[in-house]
Length: 401
Image: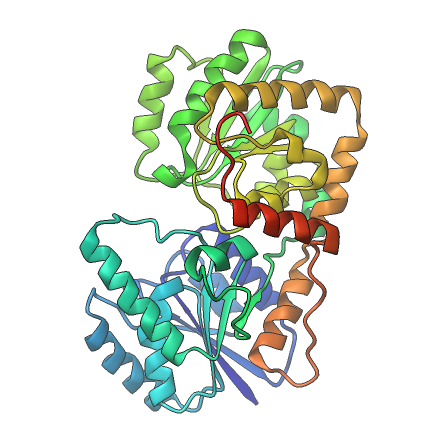
């Protein structure tokens, strides 16, 4: 029996948490025992579904005290021994748990990065704290994983190509559910979208990282040119009311619809004509892969992570996330191009369908050292990988690039 402990902040609704739930469901190995530790103080809304898979979920709160957490986590490991693998999904904050695992004699200790930036206030005290966390990761991790080359490079600028511990595990999606969803009219009726309207979607939490303020300005320019376009913003978060107020001030209430956080992403995507993601930072962006797998063309930020998550057919529509005019022009151009060339949807579908849950599960098993497991090839073929790395080294293009 091989015992794996997955460490997350919580099992709340979110892209990474949903991804892990799907991976757990795909790991059909009778000699594999999984447990999940939540360090955020609560297990989250997805915990019942994880438990239904026969996976124990328990808490060991971080409470902003790394040394105290490390002691408590080590005691939990020793009490629940033996674990063969501790796999943390909290970036630099894996440091204390991996160091505790090292002290408890766990042989495989993995730190997994799912974003380019921590997403919190970046003052000097926080930077010092993050450096300390990162130091613990580098000292105690046997493997350092990320969802993209861009994420690895963002955190390990000098080591991402030379440190043998570093690997990329792509985020997979439920391909069959996304490609078989057929709820276009049902969803559009639910949100009162007129039959002839073009629907542009955005799926993501209302946080600064997602750049909703720019998206609203982009929407204003798009509807000025094409009044039959509607926007559907799906998600929740601390900035939701602020974005709603911005929409109202811009006079866009009849053009922009808000939907709460949803579990039926395949249904929603089947009703969309295009998905836009002007994020300031992502690790890889699961929603871009989901959209393309569903055959939905995408416009996104011209950032290193997007070159990995977007089919080559849509690279020409990537724009600086602060370039409101450029992003609006890209949306308008892609709407026209997709209407004229239906093969764009098929190219999106072919690209997205490479990122399967089964491939992610196989890569995870290989990282854990499961006997006979082999990591599948990276869906970024050699030519695209060269392009990706070139753009990572260049960084994000400036306006006009």
